[in-house]
Image 1 (cartoon, rainbow, N blue to C red):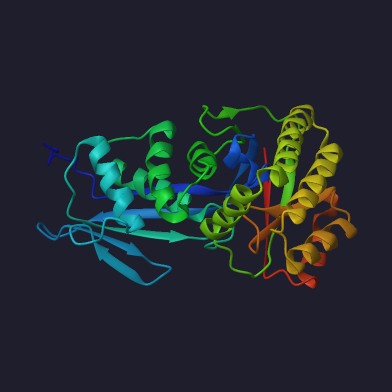
Image 2: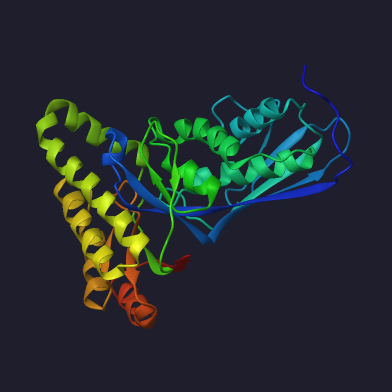
Amino acid sequence: MPSSHRSEVLSATGSAPGKVILCGEHSVVYGQPAIAVPVSDLRAQAQITAAAPGSGLRLVAADLGETVTLRTAPADHPLAAIARLTLAEIGAAAPDAVLTVRSALPIAAGLGSGAAVSVALARALATFLGRELTAETVSALAYKVEKIYHGTPSGIDNTVVAWERPVYFVKGSLPEVFSIATPFHLLIADSGQYSSTRAVVAAIRSRRDVDPSRFAAPFKRMGEITRQARIAIASGELPALGVLLDENQALLADLGVSTPEIDRLVNAARAAGAWGAKLTGAGAGGNIIALVAAASLPGVREALRAAGAVHVWHTEVA
């Protein structure tokens, strides 16, 4: 039986970053490695406050103008799902409270918005009930909700968002946090195109099922690029990392997940002095990342805006 006891905390908060995949998207679904890093400057925030006795737990998605009550929300509602999973994990009954989630992360843009919301909500709810969740636990809970969003997720989003550390990831294996010799700067540019990770991943899977040989070599090379990228990051060889990002982009474009809008942003970043640039996430829209020296940040940012970026964000990976 879940416990009805909770501490006298009247409010609590939780937070989680976004993420970008540096290299290895799509191939990671098929056993190749990928590297993802947190975007700590773009975050999801959750706040929970006590409510009148008997009112139950209300979940508010402030950015969407949506409110649901936990006791009546459907099983596949993402906010309700992570709340129920968290309560089951800590063995607690739903409190009488209002839990509000806000996020600076754009939806369906490859930045891990769904995972960030899940992690922030789980942390706030657990803290409100006098418990703390480890990164490993909250990652596992968020992964279950990622299945609602994406169908067959790789697990990389929830992992890097929960740990908030650069992660070398192979599906089915424990994530590896690895060292960074030199902090580096990324610019993230929004193409303005909606992208459904579930749809794009499913489309690649369908094509691969029809012609596995078409994808074997590109996916293998993406894995090699990722392993080389890890070495470049660990040794501080940032220009070499940029070359690897460019090659990864060429392979993704060959698979058909780039778009003219993404290509225009990638080319603009490179022309303005970025060491390398590529799409991040599923592709077919969403965002690109550009690896940029600190001195080149203003020029590359302006070039991306001139090339049509709807938003340009900066994050330092340290």
